Image (cartoon, rainbow, N blue to C red):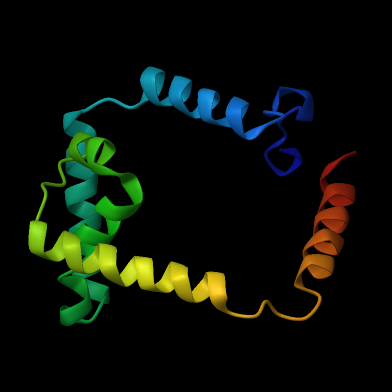
Length: 124
């Protein structure tokens, strides 16, 4: 939280608290709006200009995958069952690969060193 200047006492102390906070934020702030739909449409149009055509076909499905069905509907992303299924399978395979692959040597130590360095930088 220190990188965002959030008092660390306000951060959840457990997974359960984090889940409850996520749900509360979602209930208070996630709503369907015409502005959100328009911004999402513009974002998709932009992606289609900078991403190769074959990959761009799955951009909306990828966004839907990460947002989830409910939030995706708020921003006007309609389900596309075939593309959604392919995207889900590809992401599941990537997750599985990450679970079974050997982590980089000392990755935890590097992460913690970076955390400590950044904490010192951001906390005055």
